[in-house]
Image 1 (cartoon, rainbow, N blue to C red):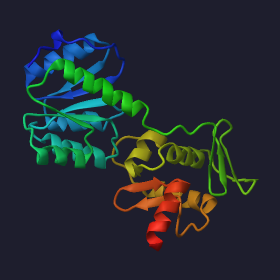
Image 2 (tube, one colour):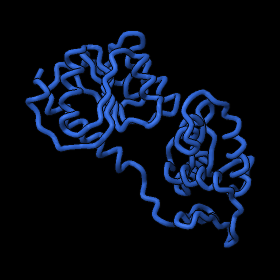
Image 3 (cartoon, rainbow, N blue to C red):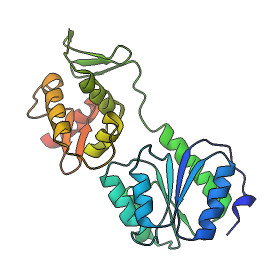
Length: 253
């Protein structure tokens, strides 16, 4: 395995979590990425890694070893995704088995690096995943329209059939968040973290009430929402017009 000092990479100010139980490898990676401008934290155990991943502010990227003590990397990733953590994750593993990798991807991993790895390759993978994640959200622009609703982001207003919709400040923030993350499943915990600014255990009934109120104002049929759809057991998903049309066509087939 190449030593971190042997690699070169562009400077970055991203927050990076390294979850690696090998203290020597973890410390070497921590030193290398810190020297290149990353804000780095090193966790040696699964419980610590999960705690770090679910605590604000979120990490820009996580290097997650599969074989962690207390909780293995798969369990850490599964629980983190369930908690609404959407930080990109690169799994580090000694196994190069197809089934092994599929399990990680199914749980929400963004990439895989097999040990022993070349540090230049790891650095390149980190930069590539960061680049994808930073450009992953669709460009919404100043105005976004779905159905008969038009959302204007600069003045934080929404119109329906040409008439202003009486949204509260929080309802607009929720709607804007869904539109910006359209096509993606958003957990209740993710909404609490990113819209409310709350991290930790708290009742989610308040979120459901706000979503129900928002549906009454933007949906043609609030009881059968076309845009702000429920993903049972997880949260919600905002479906754009083209996706709603595709879903409807599939249902009619």
